[in-house]
Length: 220
Ligand code: G3P
Image (cartoon, rainbow, N blue to C red; front, side):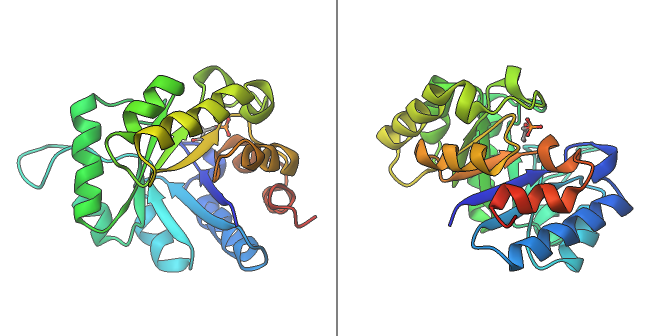
């Protein structure tokens, strides 16, 4: 069983009413396949979606602060209270300082939540693995949203990221992402040693989201 995490980003097709619809599609597909399917949604949608669907719901980011005098911040404790399973950390579109990544990984663990630290290449994957998150997800930025799958365009990045991460920390689970769209892209990622994929546009921006996700996990 592989891991598939769908990042809704700030896409219109993955926000508000449409986010709930897409979350229900993901829940339905998850119930009919062997893959683990999780979704990473907007902060605004997280409380409703976490209540309405029976799959794991992640935040796309958390601020590295506790409760207190921090205007406009959303911290790990807040997403925990609203039923999140965990959070992406350091996504390419939401980079953090090293100290903040470390804080978030430790805080999520303390709260019993799952951390998915995003990285951009092999050395940063090894560095992230040293912080002992649950997952690292390597995503070459230039392939994000391109429709060109990392597993085919840069297989060595995936393979070497898995090796580098496991060398540092045998427990960490490695995902890859960027351009992953088809079942073939997904299977190739698994063959390269990744435990799954983190993806967005291939499903969220698809004309038929349900069909796209079914195809990705090999149901059609
Ligand atoms: O978080 C997943 C993401 O950055 C990859 O995006 O659209 O290339 O699947 P995409």
